[in-house]
Image 1 (cartoon, one colour):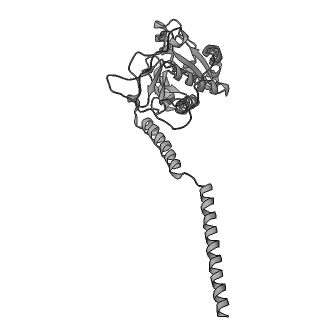
Image 2: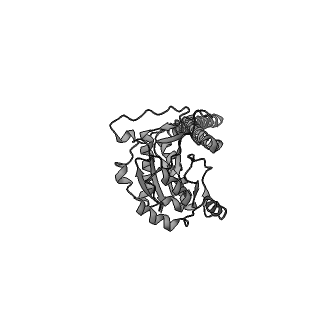
Image 3: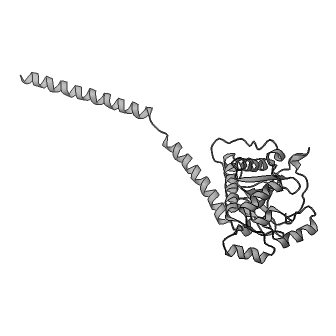
Length: 298
């Protein structure tokens, strides 16, 4: 009887060991089949966080005084023809340090098929939207300052998303709806550059609100300046397509390293504007001689 009991205990122990081993093998197989490479995921997460921190830090820490480029005022000043519109090669851009590598697949830079045909909104078309969404035109700058204090106009000088050129024939004021459009364009542009693996840059606004006295002074040197301008309503901005401000790079009081005549960045900007125009958020006119996109909020 004792021998039979010992034999049964031995059998139970063997069965337990077999079941235990089989169970461990199954658990190991399942873990192996569904295992996740945690180090790789964490590395990707750290790369993404580092990229966001780099861009956010660069945008938030730079004051507008460090972003405004030196040079001639762009209001009403005709520029040389865009090299991209002629037979000459696109000019080399100034190198920028600290290019962000997102570690992901890059989207292609496509742009619009024709700047003139995709952005044909002439002054008469934009003027109707300007009258609908804008202020009553003012003659003096003191009147414009009063509208700012009444919250009918917004000062756009200080923004981490774009820079404003040295303005001599206009003032950096927009109605809130137009300011929101400008913010959307600028953020979309930065995001598009990142998705295409291009270095982050800020857009440059070259003309904003014009008073009656501003237009009178502008007409003395520019016969093409119209009295009934969309810029009088605080709904319209000019955005340069031949000058972009690098977020990272070298800055000092003596030399500003702008990126000039970069055709790929011009194409990226055209994609952003084309999307918003198709969404009926703005009218856009391609200004070849002025070197800018002239746009009005809808």
